[in-house]
Each structure stands twice: as structure tokens, then as C-alpha cells.
Length: 541
Image 1: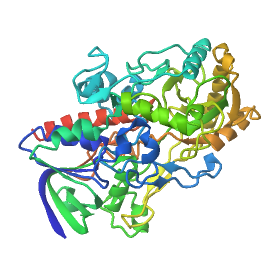
Image 2: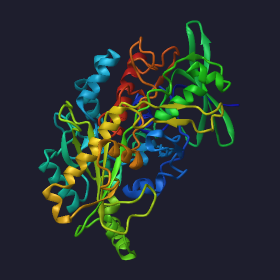
Image 3: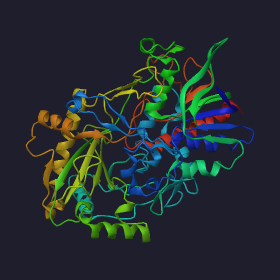
Image 4: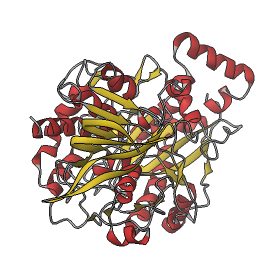
């Protein structure tokens, strides 16, 4: 085994959180940092063209290629479960939507951890400090930071009509979803710069890459953490990994920072002997710390994709139906970085309540001027739009568990979608609300006709069954290494993101969330990394 050297910090994973930490920690010229990434550089052209997510998801060059186990809530179906395997991580393949969630999400984190520093009013400055908002600095937004946030570069009549229909049924227009209350309907803000994807590798890692105290190793697969028995208990001293045909070890003088995401981080912990004792022993791994919560508490947003045929509307289905249309779309992007190739996967968003008793919206819509049977398949031959709706605060809890002691084997991902009566009830209400919006006068001129799941599903139970047939992940897994109070049996981390029972080790990514945020999860993950960088710097000041 070759030595890759000794560093103050070792960051495992070059995704959203890893890129932010690499940037922030190397600001201290006296601190040395090693960043290890299993994927390659973000030099694949389709990463940077917004519509290129179609070529990145399901591509082993940029995606871990995970699948869920067959899920009873989805009528026995298994889903693809994309996770970025490239510098920038999932920010290199995601939908580019900038969304913080509800202020109450963070107040709830503060309550369950007993740490008031996670409250909305405390984390808002962290969102602002990294932001470069197109509208300039304000009480809610920052300017001049690394993380560019822009308006989208196109609109669609069919989406404008959906927005007007939503307003007609009581969902107001919204110009900004990111002030702490995302109620309303409007076009999403996106992480782009002049029509080009803006990932965390560009925003944070590239400026830091020239610093002599940062070492970046790509194409390196972490096998396990190196843990020793200290006088006060286990201590993480470094990492064992492979790359370039060589097995390496690297030592950490201060801390190892696990930033491998909601699937990768619990997998690495379990392979290293940190996790549920019975699971580790089942796979021949000697337990270092019996932490039952590692891999538990998996939460995700299940989107229910309703498709409506329309008449007299311009949609991507018809625009891209022939070679001339495709050529026109390509030229528009080549000349102006606008048009359909600059599209985020979803353009229009809406946040609404499944029932008036909800204190804040518990449903999110992603509305698209296109339709297809499922991801990766061709667009339908008829004009249509898709209104996907998800339960923002699902009650279902799944888990991520190693399938063997082989570090190269994919873990078992079991989300347990629609496994609670409340989730099924909310799913039925979400489908019913979508029908109400589509039936509003503003969409009448396009004569929308439900194609999926189909008008034959009417009762609450039938709609819940339909949800299981059309539901798919919107790629927001979180919670598998949750932070919590000392008495929480499923807590993996304290509120400073330190692994309970193992010194010298923190987890910094979406897995730390005790509860999923009420919206897309990339921006909250970036904020978590900003906060972690401050806590780490303070502890070694």
C-alpha cells in the first residue's frame, strides 16, 4: 500500500459539500487538504449544457448508476437512483434549481438537535454569503458570492397558462421562492451562468485548485476509513483508497470529512465498522462503533408524474419532432445560449397545501412543457405537458445498507415510498389538486386531456394506487446520517456533524438532515457545508 501523504484534512467526495469545504478550508494557508473523488473531472461537454442531464444520468462516466430495491409502495417497481460520480457531484447532473425550502424546516432542525444555530435566521446569512443573485443583494439574497443564481432564459405559453390556472384555484403567483416561505407558483431560479450550468466544481473548486495547500485526486475509490483505538475510544486517522491501479493510504492530522452523499456516506461508514452491529457482523465486518442510525432515516421526494395532452400549444414534444426542429433548437443554443437546450429539467414550480389544515405548503410541483413514458425514453409524438407533484414532508422512512463486505458492490437502497397511510392520503390529494388546477379556465383554450395516470382513477384508494404506478424519485435522498441529540437512538452525528463515538470524523452532506427540506435539496446541502467549514475552522483555531 502506497502512502499518499499526510494532511490536516481529508475530504472524501468531490460533490457539492466537498467542493465547498475544499475552498473554505484552504483559505487557511497553514492547513493542508486532500480531496478524494471516485469520478473524474467535470470536462464532459454535456455537464455544462443544461439539457445535458439527459446524457449524464444513467451514464457511468458521471453517475453511480444505483437502483432501488423493488418497492411495495411502487407496485413492486425498482427505480434508477442517480447520484453524481464526477467533480461537482450531483450539482453536475441535477436539475439546477436553486431552492432553500421553508424557514420552518431549519427551525425544526434546531429543535430536534437542541442547537439554535441551525435556525432559519442563523443559516440565512450562510445562504447569502455564497450567493451571487441576479437581482443583487437584499435582506434575503447575496451578491458577489461563488454560487450564481439566475432567471431562466425562456418561457412557455402552456406553463404561463398553468401558472394562471393555479392562481385561479387559490395558489398565488410568486416571484421568489427563497425568502423562507415558498408558497405560490412561478418560474424556478436556476444555478446557471448565461445559459450554462454552474456546478460547484466551477464555483468553488476551480478557484481553490491553484492553492498549493490543496491536493485533488480523481478516479479514486475509497475502500474504508482507517480507525485506531485511542485512550478515549475509536479515532479516525485516515483513509484507504484505490486509484490508478494502486492502493493508497492517506493520514489526517486533524479530521476526515465524509462528503460522499446520502448513499455513499453511510455505505463508507458501514464498510469501516461504524453502523448497526448486526448488519456489520452479517457481512464479516468487525464493529468499531455500534451506531444503529447509520443508513437509517432515508427520506426522498416521490414525484407523481401526471401527463396531459393539449391542443394548439407549443411544447417540446412538437418542437423536437423532426430534424429541422432539432437543428433550430441547436442553433439557438449555439448562438445565444437560450432556447430548449438551456432548459432546466423543470421550469415552472408551485408550492401548495394538500389540505387547508397544513401550516405551510406540503406539495411541490415541477411543471414541464414536454412528456415521455419514463426518463430516458423518447418524447411523446403528441403535444403535452407534465405536472409532477411531490409530498414535501413524507412520513416514510427507508434505509441504505451494504449488500456485502465488498466496497465495490452497490448498497441496497430501500426508500419505502408510500408506506404510510398519511403518505398515500397525501398522494391521492396531490393528484386530485392537479386535476383541479388543469380544469381551471386559464388552461381551457388548450383542451387538456389526462393521459397519465388516466381519468379512470377516481376514489382516494384508486388515486393512491395510481401514485404507486406513476411515482418516481426526484433525486432528493437525505437523512441517512442524521444529526440529533445525545438521547436519540437513530442519531449518527451531534449538531456539529461529528460522528458519535468516533473522534476525528465528521459527515458533511445531505445525509446529515434529520428531516428533508421542503423543496430541492442542493442549496441546503451547500449551506450545510458552509456552516461545517465555519465549525471546523473554529474548533482548530
